[in-house]
Length: 211
Image 1 (cartoon, one colour):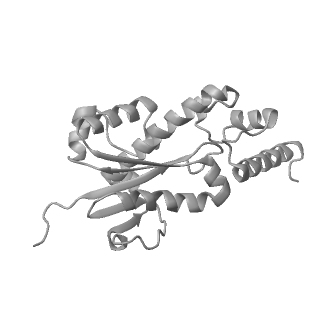
Image 2 (cartoon, rainbow, N blue to C red; image 1 turned 180 degrees about the vertical axis):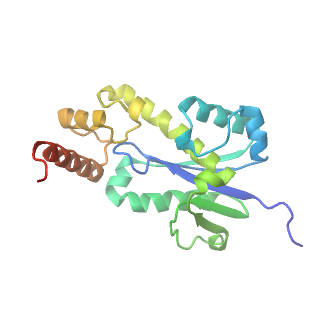
Image 3 (cartoon, rainbow, N blue to C red; image 1 turned 45 degrees about the vertical axis):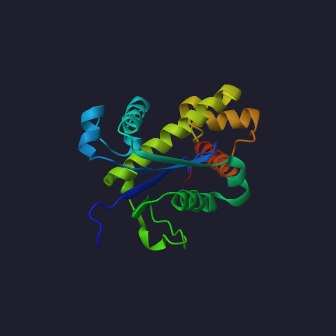
């Protein structure tokens, strides 16, 4: 007998391009329409990058009140440094999918996740899903809120890097702080090295402009 109420699980991550901190991914199965979320939060559901911190937090709270199924996975900075961000980006979604029961899984982006026992056929990567598919949009919001909490806690231990504001991304303030104080164990070595080289290159271009 064909199912009439198929469950869709949306997945997205936060922190892929940061210089510091873990990679955080979330998966969400919604019990309602995006219009219901809008009515409860009074905020249009859209890409987490287009929402401010307070808006993301409010939507997250509404999702909990509506009893959405929410799952979160974290891959540490140490694992990213040991295995690379490409591995981490695939692995974090694979871990989530393996532990969730759903009819379909949509992952933001164009990742090739390979075989996942019993679920390969149900997984699809969709570019810009974080702006178009409600479950994926919500997953991105959850991942961002959870990662911001982690970075705010780390900021208390390492306030000189401004993680409470930049969440570990490569802002000019963050890069200057790394140059002054060096890296912590929560920095991603390859990312930082590249950012410092690019920063030095930009300074060089300013001092010695092209003819």
